[in-house]
Amino acid sequence: MLQARRMYIPPLALLGPGCVKEIGPEIKKMKVGKALIVTDQVLLDIGVAQAVLKILDESQIEYVVFSDVKPNPTTKNVYNGLEVLKENKCDFVISIGGGSPQDCAKGIAILATNPGDLRAYEGVNKTENRGLPIVAVNTTAGTASEATINYVITDEDRKVKMVLVDTNSLASIAVNDPELMVKMPKSLTAATGMDALTHAIEGYLTQGASLLTDALNLESIRIIASSLRDAVKDGGDLEARSKMAYGQYITGMAFSNCGLGIVHSMAHQLGGLYDLPHGVCNAVLLPHVVKYNASAVGDKLRNVAIAMGEPVEGLSVEAANSVAISAIEKLSKDVGIPSGLAELGVREDDLETMADMALADACTPGNPKTPSKEDIIAIYKGAL
Image (tube, rainbow, N blue to C red):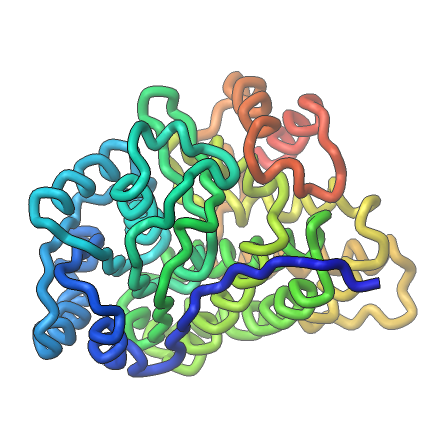
């Protein structure tokens, strides 16, 4: 029987090559004044942000730029951006970038309408007021932050990645133009692409999955598995980039409404403690967590294998599970993801502390199998 559900997705999504050119007229419809642009210095340096700023100039949209955003955005980044917003009397936000500027922009927009310390809003739906309007221009095919109610900010004092799940942070307009993604380096394309695959697989296996999110996530798995290699191999391959932009967006719509699992819970701790790239951490952990969860997901991994283009007809559940896990490992290897956490500098003496934090992470309750601290430590060790 179908269950009653709420679905939170951006009111407007612009998708496909050249779609960013449509933001001017759409912003005019919003009846807003001055924008705070939230981006990072790299995107300014390589000209990606300027391409968007040129469109705003042509549309006579007033803005001020804030580019002090780290790859793993911090509370300090959010507070600094909020100060710039207030000083310049901005009444909406335009985020340009991958997950880091997108998440930072959400934090700024939320604090502009909800007083106090951002740490008070860690968790699920802790705010009372809708954040300022956000026009989220995505430049990587990975995090899908432009489509979700989730954002992650590092608390520098605790060295913890805070997960904030908040319907008040949802963007007003989500923009996925693959023409803005072609300048992204191979390593970033691989990491963000595997991040998207992790979203799709975890979202498909999570306890909160539904018929609708399953359909979206399986399609996302199919698209990513068939296009990520080409997107990494040739940064100018607009067709592969377009498919990846679409695949990561539709899993964003899905996991934002069904949740994730302990791949993300564990990856968040690696990012918080070691400041490692989130997508890489997800990619390394994904096959190990899927193997741990296999006994709790029925025959669902057979469908994952099929979506990844693997033949599993006539195989037992266990054999199909192995095919799915092997397909994940092969894709990760093919796009150049490190083979283990030890290559990233992760130390075994930190595993117990990270396990404690992972169990408290907002993504853990969605995992299809309830882990113990010992389970988490064992998965970390297996991924070293």
